[in-house]
Length: 186
Image 1: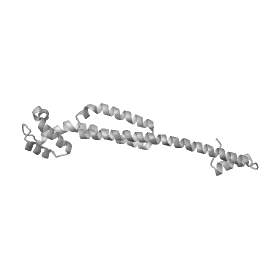
Image 2: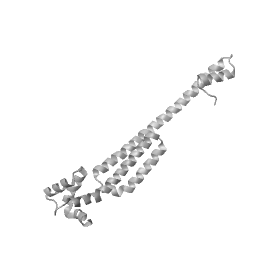
Image 3: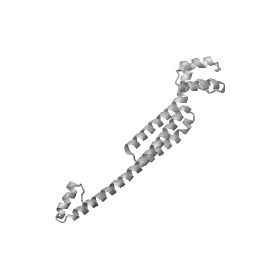
C-alpha cells in the first residue's frame, strides 16, 4: 500500500500530482481525476483509482480534519462570545485558538491554500467580531454608568421634593419613595 502512495510522491509525478491536487481540492471524483491525468499525458505510468484514494486519504484527510476541528472551535468560540459577551471568555477563546493553530501549523503547511484561506478569513472574522463585542461592551458599561447617575439624580430630586412637603411624616415619605417611585432605602 505505502509503495503505491509513494509513487505519487516521486519527482517524475510532479506535473501529474499538480493536476491531482487541484482536482481533489475542486471536488472531482477519483475516476474523473484518473481520466484527466491520463488525458494530460503527464503521468509517467498508469494511475489507478485505489492509489489515488490512498494518496488522498493520507495527504488531504488529515489536513481536512484539522481544518474541520479549527472550524468547530471557531464556531464554538463565536457562540460563547455571542452568549456571554464576556471579555474574559473572549481572551480564553483567543488563547485556545492560538494554541490549536500552533499545534496544527505543520499540518496546515501541507493544506490546500483555499482551505487555509478560509480558515484565515474565519479567524479574522472572529477577531473583528471580538473587537465589535469589546466596543459594544464599553458602550454598555458607559450606558449603565449614565443610567446609574440619572437614577441617583432622580432619587435626589424626589427626596428634595418630598422634603419640601412639611406635612408628611418620614414613614409616609418612605412609602411614597418605595411604592410610587420604586426607590428603596439603601
